[in-house]
Image (cartoon, rainbow, N blue to C red; front, side, top):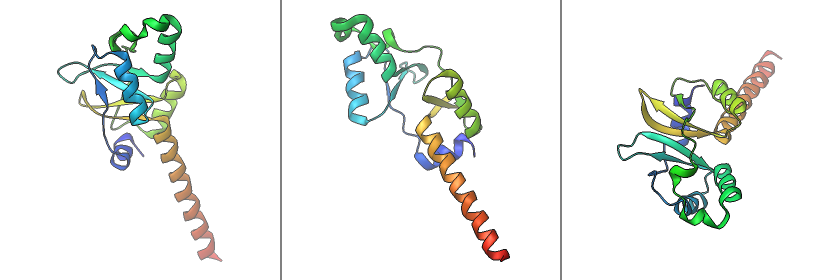
Length: 144
């Protein structure tokens, strides 16, 4: 299974903010949408960075009450690891594990087309294992 298949199943909704978006507004978006990260895109819609819950906690530890005056650009990860729609689920999981992050923006010919999370990848792998297990059971039952 590849990322394109995963996006067909989960959808390709992208939640993003501009770099100048106040961090508190971004935090409200994370909380209200029940997501773990928000993409930061420039006015042209190009990926500029990502802000995860972990980035917010780090900023809170560093800036404390000053956090109310911080913008997304001040805490975002700029060099974002991305995948393409052709990336396999196994490769995506390996990237997340190696990089210690839980979200991967998806690009198709350099255009942002979605985002996947470790939860999406794990769910897809579990579904695949369930299907394989059911096929094996069916095969065994039909041979008996």
